Image: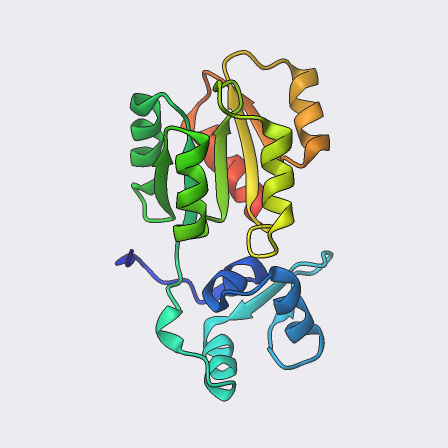
Length: 192
């Protein structure tokens, strides 16, 4: 999918990894060795890479640069409630900061993860075919998918269950119903 919205001028290591089709750890090694220039966020270990530096690096290593599709966060919504997924998709992609995909089943989600390499997966953990712990393990087992941020949503989730999901490898959780603004803030937090 192509993005026609405003392009970002600075990327995270996760975004660079997605563009170059490598693991985020590989991008960190490039950065730390000085091959890929950028900067660290003050007071944090987070690295940022200017797009022009990424293009320079890619050209010097013979990598095709047409893959430099910057700008939006890829979000895969895994929820059997198509109406809710459509509402979330519309709200998240309205300003161009997110590019959304929808899967009604865990199987469908697997195919979309392979095809689109989303940055974030919003997963209804109460869906009958979703095993949240197995999902975390499956994603972490593949180096190219290990950087995907997981957000759990459910209408039947207690605070304790949410905390348990965080310990299992999820990066955030929200109980339904929630405000789209809360979801957007959580996406920004887990992708920062």
